[in-house]
Length: 120
Image 1 (spheres, rainbow, N blue to C red):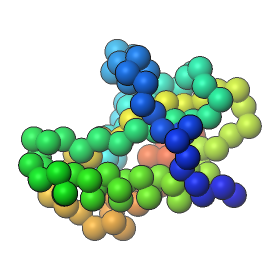
Image 2: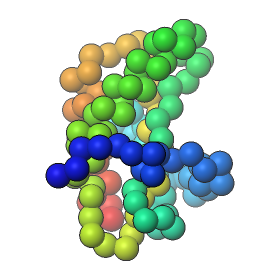
Image 3: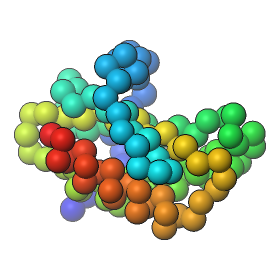
Image 4: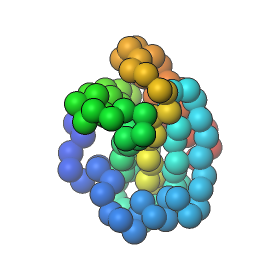
């Protein structure tokens, strides 16, 4: 199992992120919302993480939550790893208005990844 989260797996393309919002396939498992694109044209699954500035004014708090979400994804991404041609582009949004413990974020991430796997 590869637990790395290299640069090639990070979703950065403006066009891809725009396409995510226009296609609008999403679901929620509190405190996370996931927006995904199932037939993404890339060699690897890619993910991006977002925390709204409206809920967390401090960049330190936003960055901490994003680090926790990335870590939960990195440790559990093997749930959606697959050998098929279909690749995912995924954007995770943090919905809670307060900082939650890492265990809560990880539990939601595992649930979301399981649901993503079943939708494919």
